[in-house]
Length: 487
Ligand SMILES: C[S@@+](CC[C@H](N)C(=O)[O-])C[C@H]1O[C@@H](n2cnc3c(N)ncnc32)[C@H](O)[C@@H]1O
Image (tube, rainbow, N blue to C red; front, side):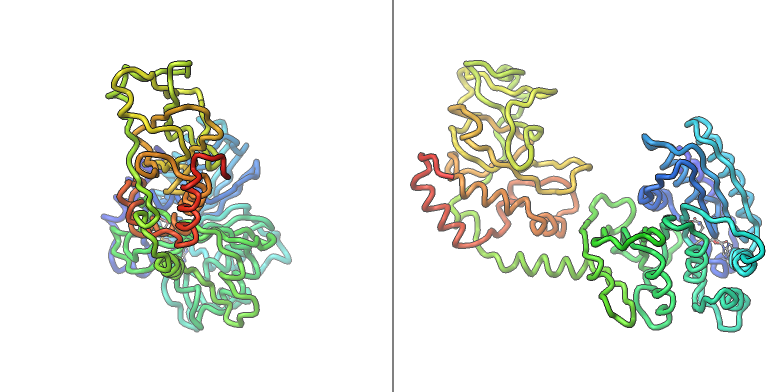
């Protein structure tokens, strides 16, 4: 509610802003989905949160932050927010936004206090830092920002202000970031959306050095498409959001994600060793964010697999039980005259767990007409047709193991796909191999490259190439003894 309501201010301001001033001051404001994504990256564990929003515009980022933390189970006791904005017109909206933030906080039992500093953040903050010896400077445990970007000449007032605190950088946004890094407390968190340009390039080398010495990167998100993050503003920048913690130990891995835009559900996420992002000993301190390279390597690895399902003598079909058409057979609990009915909710840690009482019937009565919905006792691989949003993977596989579930037949519900051999089970070894392959990150990433949605169709699974002859050979030889209790 808060974020959407504040978005009216952004849209209204966008209509009224003068174009020249807009590009001078870098007034390209953050749309709600991006603001929410940014706010969601904070751990924000302190009970007393102190938030800095430098170049706050109408306050969209502060609003997203307030909305995020007041909606969490563990809410803070208080939020003290400081917003800097140079444009007096935007400050009017900003004050209204902060009033709404206060109301949201009050209704969640969180104390809220705020300050709008109308003026030049560079000048004000650099001035404070210069005088730190004489007057202590307020520090923040959280900073969220979408700083303005524009080149700053070496004799500009901004450059002089930065130079006074020992920062040499050629763009407004890296200037803002350098100051904000100073204003963070130790272990303070920063989430910023910026152009991707600082990650390489000679001009940004001193900034990269400061950034990487100060901040332990935790998450980087890139928008694959240059235009989506700020689509109303026609900003042709490749944008990146990053989250880091000041003075924290560099975690071994950094979460790198990418999407075409903030509203895209199709997000690739991977944990990347820190030293793959910033190579140790690299004098340039380049920051490598390589979802595309990853994509390429995924595609390359998949292209090395050649075996088709047909060569493995396996088929994949959609579960035969459409529950609303089979109501007369459905039973909540198993009895002597029923067989297992398997839904996606029966997937657990790579296996089918049955029965699993809950909101879905767990059994099918063996009545006339049920036979065509069933397959015989055996070991099958099941794949969910729809993964939930919370699920990390798109392709989720599990083994229905005849040794774990004792039943002469089984019904697979229509929200699952199942791998079989001529409507019968597979050998245990082959089933485990296929499931392990399908549950691999390689398959998941590969799937995301060509599928923009969360549905996994039998056709998709049929079109994959699978690991080769060893698995096929093993599968065939085991098939010959599939009746035995091999493992
Ligand atoms: C890229 S916009 C982002 C606005 C807002 N944070 C958001 O995400 O929607 C940058 C903002 O910084 C403001 N700004 C530009 N130069 C500034 C300065 N020197 N001091 C303070 N604010 C400044 C602009 O007026 C603009 O509102």
